[in-house]
Length: 389
Image (cartoon, rainbow, N blue to C red; front, side, top):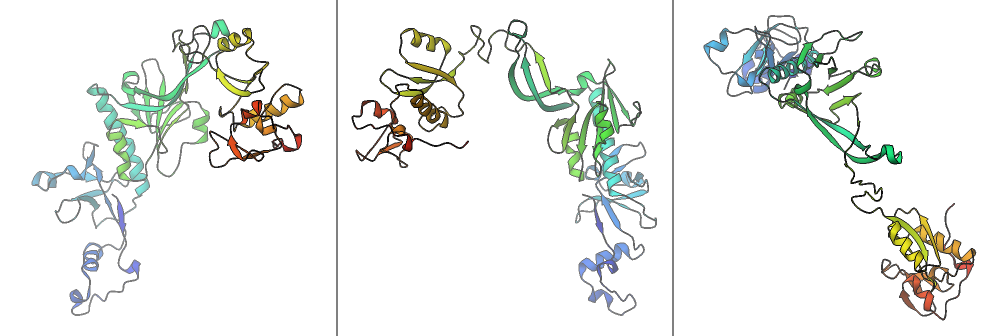
């Protein structure tokens, strides 16, 4: 809410204060500005917050125009000069400095101190009244259930970790030295663990603090409304809320034996693998199945060739891995028959998913495995698919 109003002269408007009929020559906006600034040609700064005689932050929106409020003293968070609450109905409520003081007030200092004090007040109340103050940041959950048996951990899940700071950190201090550092706010647990709360207005957390490995929550403040995340008692990791040096990998037993990574025979779901296969009739495919399924097919001699492959796309008609494998099979003198190897093959761009081949000899579209039963099939290395190195 804070903003500046420059004097009329600073905006290039010349006013002859001695001229007769000056009121009729000035616009309403110019008259208002002159009324505020004619006794003080400095910047007029308007703030939403001030501190009272008890050093508590006061939001002007919560004040009403009455005799009790007029008796109170409000001071600026930045320069400590007296602020006047403007509580009229026509203009938005705000605090302004008295016109008879020499201002040396920094909006950046105001925002920094406002956020720092607001965090201290809100968090202190959470401790006093046993209310939660939530933080939420990204973590990786790693399961170690089978680490001893298989020397392997599993990436169980990647998501957000939400927990209540007040449950662990029940002590809060303003600008308390910790080693060679003085954080804006220091949280301490019963075990002596520390978290730095740092407010960033113009300067982010220093490299030295980051390198110290202290856990840091950095809250970026660019305007008064940014402190609402503090009032809401909930800090969600974002561009404005950074969690520095927090433990991101959480390693423990998550699956309790039902392995989502497919460690057999304990897997919750069977592990699937991609196989390039050639059938006795010359047809070929990339199939995604279990090792048990493959073993059964080998025992029943369903394939004349099989190979474990890695693919990004299991659609075997378009996948470059499939095309490479049928070309390799041909040169390895395996009995593979596929339209992609035929001199008459072309591409069917209208229905590539179901029938990717256009046969130039038969003038029709078909699946690439139709070559297995085609009497006109002619393998020709000059027509084979080509690949980038």
